[in-house]
Amino acid sequence: MAPSTPAPRADPVSPSGVVGVVLAAGEGARFGGPKAPFVLDGERLVDRAVRVLREGGCDRVLVVLGAWLGDVPGADVVVNDGWAEGMGSSLRAALEHLGADTYADAALVTLVDLPGLTTEAVRRVVGSGSDLAVATYDGVRGHPVLIGRAHWAGVAASARGDRGARDYLAAHPPSEVEVGDAADGADLDVRP
Image (cartoon, rainbow, N blue to C red):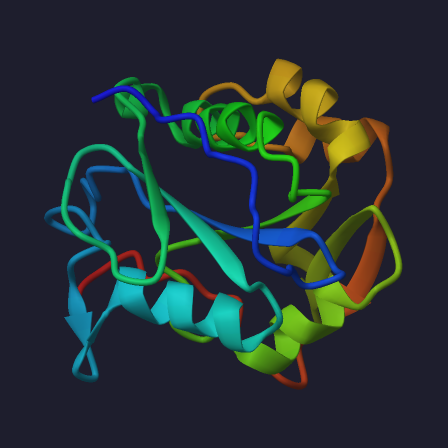
């Protein structure tokens, strides 16, 4: 399934122009299967990620799927047929999709397997006032990562394998937004 090109929005939009992006295409090899549909505390991880981004200030959310395909209420879905390459291919798919979106000024990127991410952490990164910002947990960089439109081409060009935006952020130091007092950045690598 090829990604669709979004139509320009006719309705009023949030002045922020920040679209939440959930990278959820992986197979979850160490986890024993794709993480997106996994139910934790009565909610699928993918639905939780969408909810947290929306409650944190993103009025639109884009989810990138691949190894698992399914309906994700409250989000647009892009299918990454090259998901096996790693997270970098999903990030490229998301940024390519958003490139045609006249609403999107920035992408707030997170991973589907961060059950400790909170709306407060999302709010802080969205409200950072920067066009390139990363959440930190006690000084250690994590997700979400805010990427302004001016950085999309550079991030996409450097996103390979499972490195995502890491190489780009090393060359273009982002603002760091401490969220460790309000969230947990640990990913869910094994089933609870």
